[in-house]
Length: 233
Image (cartoon, rainbow, N blue to C red):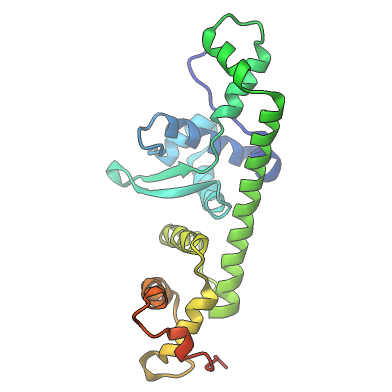
């Protein structure tokens, strides 16, 4: 039988998150390989069909996969379908596995792979993927804990809108911006003349850019410095 395609399941993802998420990730990765933009623009129904599970199961698992850094939202595709970007490249692992299983092949492309990859390479790649998953979990936990500790907010990150918001905050955290710094700016501004007023989630999302623009602008007085001695009760 001639194999025309494959939907992979990665051991590290299976071990940490279970077979369902592993198959969903494999389906998303496969569709992303078919896109010039490297994004999966298939509907959740198609993803589920490729993974051999129901659409509802895909929908239920996607938010956790975004939180853990396995995938991220890449915007909207044609027809309003959400596009997903796989954050762990598994193509090299698959290629290496093929060469290990077919060491005597006369195919020139397989020979090149055999010459360029060793078991040590395979180990390094797998370790890097495991580290990426672990870092994604740590960042997700840091964002949720910080929002609760510094802003008193526990938003439902599982809604479609907040999935996009979570990706925004994830990118800002990776740039070194934190909820603690936003709170310092908010306090320094004595917002709307109501000292001690806590920001709503919408306040945080809408004004995050403004807070850090002031902080980074060398011509503006630091909002944090202006309110260094102010704290919430």
